[in-house]
Image 1 (cartoon, rainbow, N blue to C red):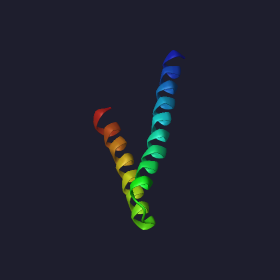
Image 2 (cartoon, rainbow, N blue to C red):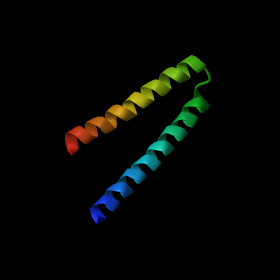
Image 3 (cartoon, rainbow, N blue to C red):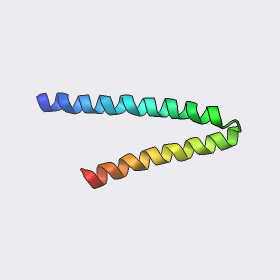
Length: 62
């Protein structure tokens, strides 16, 4: 039971910081980039980077 609670705690901490990253990095991008199409493209690239970074982290280091 204790292992499950520790695992859940890690998941919630990860989710919390992931949401913060998504919200604040989008705000920072929109502050500097005013063109909507460029902003959309950069947000897509940022999301893909985020996904692949954690995918390779999970595959390679666990």
